[in-house]
Length: 82
Image 1: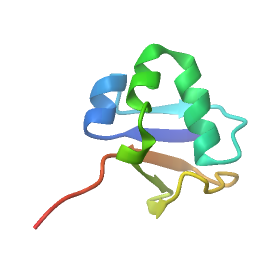
Image 2 (image 1 turned 90 degrees about the vertical axis):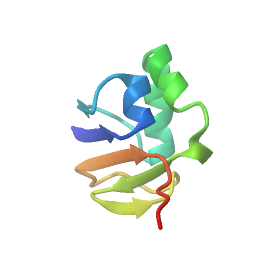
Image 3 (image 1 turned 30 degrees about the horizontal axis):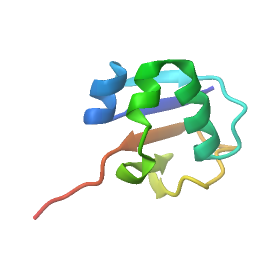
């Protein structure tokens, strides 16, 4: 099981801040595809992954990163600041 966390508008579209997911995914992209196949709200949230960032165990990662030993995956929009 992997803890999947959703932040900002990703959380708003999916409707929950986090969940535990049982997955056979090998990469973040594989996980996204599994989630998109669940329900329309996931498909909407992940319709444009170029507008998202991902962290694996609190380290920024790419969507082609492996998730074999991951405990937590977080999805969030890019941060802006000043």
